[in-house]
Image (cartoon, rainbow, N blue to C red):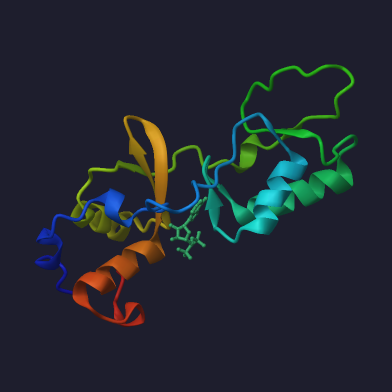
Length: 166
Ligand code: ADP
């Protein structure tokens, strides 16, 4: 793979990440304000592999399913809390579903200005599946391994499947 020259292009993380300019916003899950129903709607209306805060689709589906079956008081309107300390709710509200254990506590992050050459290197060396993109510490978007492969293919004008990803 001779991408080195190609990447002296001035491509930055912001050019490869999603969402792009006219895309709908990044699908995120908030740490302690979404209900079981909200999260189930996200999982069923999208097919993304991850949702920042980074939590895998499979872990989400399994944990919610288990809690609904085995945990008393977990219903669609139960709030899901991904933090250690979950804020108290009025006594009349349904049980809180605590899902801190399925969070990826150290998702990899680059800033939007990071050159793609470096991003590609990081993906290769660390074997990342996805990487979050931030601007001034705020979450802006996401780059998946496939996004990186597509980008390399575009630069090299090749079929993504023909590219080795070590
Ligand atoms: P893959 O890139 O392997 O198909 P995904 O299904 O997770 O993996 O992502 C599909 C596309 O959607 C990619 O271009 C990715 O950048 C984007 N994407 C991934 N997760 C999200 C998300 N939570 N919100 C918005 N877009 C996302």
